[in-house]
Structures are given as structure tokens and as C-alpha cells.
Image (cartoon, rainbow, N blue to C red):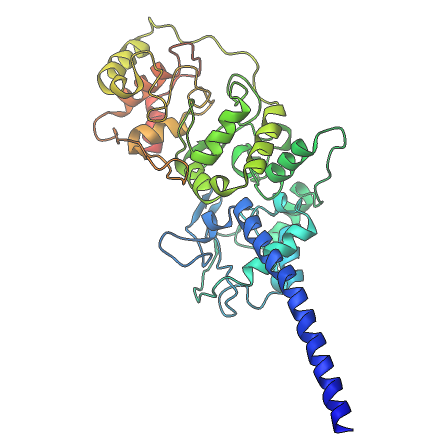
Amino acid sequence: MSKILFSLTLAATTFSAGLALAQAPDQADEIIRGRYQAILGDCAACHTAPGAKPLSGGLPLETPFGQIIPPNITPDKASGIGNWTEADFRSALKTGIGHDGKRLYPAMPYPAYTRMTDRDIGNLWSYLRTVDPVFNPVESNQLPFPFNIRLSMMGWNMLNFAPGEFRPDPSKSAEWNRGAYIVQGPGHCGTCHSPKTVLGADETSEALQGGSLQGWYAPNITGNSYIGIGSWSEDEIVQYLKTGTNGHTIASGPMAEAIQASTSLMADEDVKAIATYLKSTEGGPAQKPQPIPASDARMKVGAAIYHDTCSACHGGDGKGASQLFPALAGSSIVQQPSSETLTRLVLQGSQAVHTPQAKTTPSMPSLGWKLSDEQVAAVLTYVRNSWGNAAPSVGASDIGAQR
């Protein structure tokens, strides 16, 4: 009898071990796929502060309504999401309501994440459970009254949020649909690149047509040939997203962070799909305005400053130097409706992003110490209206406000 019991126990143990071995590869695959979802969603850019442990809480986000700090999303039970369930996590991404019914602010882009598939969210959850837990209490809601009342998000959601998973367009290719899914869902590109309503929601009728973001201007990334990326080839879009540079521009500011932590690490086929989708979108003015004439006093002053200060790198013809100094002539970035990004680059300088595919990182020095507000305004007005460019002039008050 004891031999029979031993045999049955051994068989049961062997079966259990075999089942565990069979399940282990599936779980490993989930975690690997989930890590890739974290890359697509650029989770590290917001939830990891410089020098801090991964996903333990990020730097403050400045919004028009006040400051929000991305929370700790490691599995630490005291200060992270260790006490959350998968259902809590899914609800946060799908509905903007997290653990214990806590309503989230759309700085956590659940209006985009709601489009993610249940499988992708489940994989992301599996990955986050494997991240090293870090005790780092973060008080994410730093908003002033009355915006700090989370219950107000119930009304915000009623007005501005439409939950629902992405639905492929059967008339489009698989590549186009994959690109649309990433851009609209996990990649949440519109969160930065779309203008906002007075309530801070995306202007869906102007999706991807550019928007202000923490003192930068996230440019129009539709297929518009004037101020969008319609003049870029798909290969040039891929090159930019993988390396941070191409013949048209060099990434800076928040976009440099997104390229370093997200798009440069994406699979080549996904970046190609994004390019295919973006090239197909439309938005913004189709015709250039009339440029400010060279005889204008501001243009004359700007031309002199440009010749003395900028032409050594960007060229007298504004064509720059490939992969080192971006072209200004014909640049859609230069001709955006807002000069916020250009102003910031001139005042503070910039360091190009470092990626595995582009290890050389050229930089632009700060000129804010050297040029007055009037001089910065003049040279930007000149750059935005020379070599075939055409864009609104820049005022000294615009520079002073940003300085």
C-alpha cells in the first residue's frame, strides 16, 4: 500500500513539475512582452527621475493647473503599486480609476491607454510585478485648490473622456493599423503633440497638430507638408525616431527623452508602422503665409545677428551640416505657429540625444547670456522668414516671458 501511495505521490509531483515547466515559458514571454509595452508607453520617462531606481517616481510635470509628480509604480507595498490587483491596474489604464477608486489625472494618459488591448495591459502588469520594489513615497497630487479635488475628474471624464479599445480599420493595411494603434494607444503621441482645450483635454479635431508642453512646443507631426512632416520620407521618420536626428532636425527637450527611452528601443517594424501612419494623417494650414520681407527692420537686425552668431554652424544659406547642425531652411520645426522651442534652444542651448544608433551628440551653446530679448526676437524672426521659410514674427515680450 505504501508503495502505491509513493507511486501516486511521485506521479502527482512529476505532473505538477511538468505543468510548472510548461507554464514558465508562457510567463516569461508575458514578462518580455510586458517590458516591451513599457518601452512603447515610455513609462520610464515619466516614472523614473534622473539617478533614481527604475519606475520609483518621476520628476514634476508642470501643467497649466499646477504640478503633478508621476508616482512610484514599482511593486513596493508601502509606496508603490504592490497592493494593487491586476484589475486595479487595468481599470487605471482603461478608465482612469485606480486602486480603491482613486481617480487619476490625465497627466497619466489614460485617454490614450484606454485604446490598448487587454492582452497588452496584462503583459505590462506581468512585467511591472518583476521590477525591483523601491520604497519611495511620492505625493503625486501637488495641484492647488480646487484642482486637487480628485472627485472633479468625474465631471472631466464625462466631458472629455471616451473609453474604448482601438478598432482596426479594415480598409487599411496591417502596417497602417499597427502604427495607428501605437500612436493613438500606448505611444500616446497626441498627449504632447495635440493642442489642448481650456480644461486640458486633447483637441481631438486637431489631433497631432502641435501643442505647448512645459515651455516647449511639441510640433505638428501630421502629413502636412508645410508645418508637419509631410516633406519627410518614411525612412527619414524612422531614422529620426531611432537615432534622434535626420537631415531635417535633431531632437531636443522632452522628445529627446522619448527617443532615448522609447522609440530608439522599439522594433524596427513598429517604427516603420508609426511612420506609415503619421504620413497618412492631415492637419494644419495647407498654404504658407507671406514671409516678412527682408527689408523689414526686424529682418535686417536679425540677419546681422545670424551672420555673426549662427552662420558658422547653420550656414549662411541655412542648410546646416548633416547629422551635426540641423537645417533651418525649409524646416517645418522652425515654421511652427509657436516659437517656444526655438526660444528655449537659443536661451538655454541644447544637447543632442544619445542613442545606440547615434553615439555622437552635437550640442548648441546657450546664447541667453549674450543676446537681449530684442536680439533673440529679431534673429528668430529672421530665421523663420528666410530661405523660403514663412512664419509669424517673434516679439521681445515672448522672449522675456520664457526667459
